[in-house]
Amino acid sequence: MKLMHLLFLILALVLGLLIKQLWFDTDSGPQQIGELQVKLEALKEQNKKLHNQNNHARQIINGIKHNYSAREELARKHLGLIKEDETFFHVIPSDDSSKK
Image 1 (cartoon, rainbow, N blue to C red):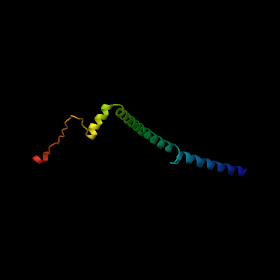
Image 2: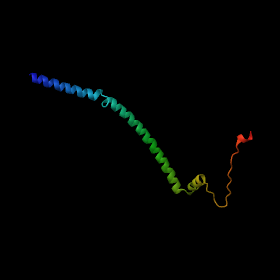
Image 3: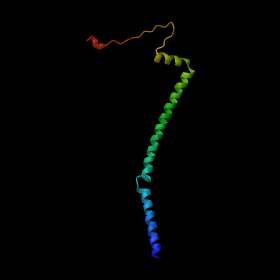
Image 4: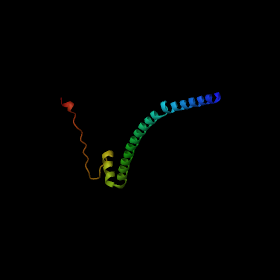
């Protein structure tokens, strides 16, 4: 009979330790699940923003690939290209500090 009491006491102790570890440790349990859910929501939001940026970049790339006027506009804006028979005027703003 004493062996059964001892075995029951050991099993109850092990069960108590497992329950404590599951519910009250910071590495596992509801606290950890809550933290992971917050991190998951933040990552989902970041993923959504990146997905939107990718879609926008894809639209710009497709516009450049299939639209000649868009390519021409970008070449004029970023590369300073001009057409034949065009006159290019480069206006330099005056320095107001030299007038003083």
